[in-house]
Amino acid sequence: MTSDNKKNWLLDVLMLPIGAITFFPFYLIIINTFKSMQETAASPLSLPKRWIFSNYVTVFKETELLRSFGNSLTITAVSVLLMVLIGAMAAYPIVFNPNRTNKLVTMYLLAGFMIPFQTTLIPLFQLMTDLGFIDRLYGLIILYMGGAVFVFFLMMGYMKSIPKELPEAAIIDGCGVGGIFWRIILPLLKPITVTSIIYQTMWIWNDFLAPMLFLNSKSNATLVLEVYSAKGEFSVNWPLFMTLTVISLIPIFVFFIVMQKQIVKGIVGGAVKG
Image 1: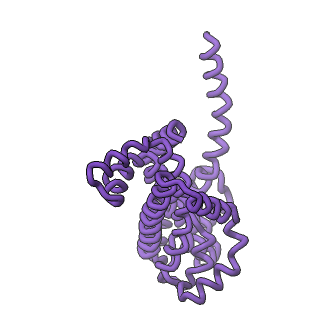
Image 2 (image 1 turned 90 degrees about the vertical axis):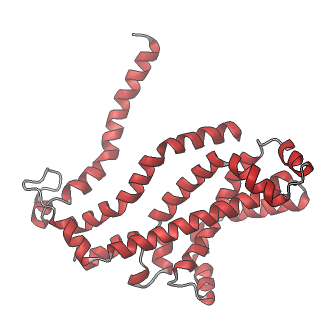
Image 3 (image 1 turned 180 degrees about the vertical axis):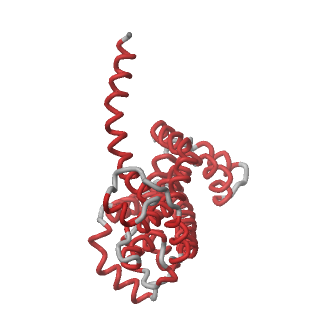
C-alpha cells in the first residue's frame, strides 16, 4: 500500500465517526416522525415498532403549511434576486472605474458589513415600525436586501480578474455602460453568481430571527416560524413537531443536493479568479 493510499484510508476511518455524529440528529428527527407520542417518549432512539404515517397527514391538516411555504418561497426568491443584481451592479463601477470616491464607498460598505446584525436590532425595529414595514413580506424583503453587501464583495473580487480591455473594446465598438454590464460582464460572473444565490438562499430560507421580529401575523409566517409555533400549537407533541421540521427542511435539502456541483464549481472558480 502506497503512502497516498494509507493517507486516504486513514482519512476515511477518521471521517466515519464524524459522519455518524453529523447524521445522528437527522436520524433522531426522521425516525420519530413515524412513531406515536408514547413510543417517542419511551424509546426515542429505536426504530418504530409500528411505522405510522398519520403524523404527516395531521401536519398538513392542522397547520397552514402551504401558505407558509409560499411566504418563504416568495421572500427567498425575490430577496436573492435583488441582492445579486444590486451587488453585481454596485461592484461594476467600483472595479472598472477606480477612484477616490469609489474607494471611500467600499470602505463604508466594509465598515457596515463588519457590524453584527444583532447590535442594530433596536434601532432597526424602530425604523421598520416608522416605515410601516412590520408584518409585511415586502418589508422583510427590503431588510434582506442588506445582504447585497456580501454579494458585492464576492462580485468585486471576481470582477478584478476580468481583463479591463473587454469593456474598453466594447466602448470603442459603441456599446454603452448598460450594454457592457448586461452583455459582457454579467455573463462572465456566472460561477460567483451561482455561488452567491446558493449561499443567500440557504441563509434566508433558514433564517429565524428576522421573521420572528418583523412578521407578527399567522398569514405572513414563514416555514421556520411555523415550526417554532408548532410547539405551542401541538402542546409539545414531539412526533408532530419533528414531522413539521422534516417537511420544512426538505425543500432546502433538495436545493442543496441539486446545486452541490455548482457550489464546488463556484468555490473553485472564485478561488482561482480571486
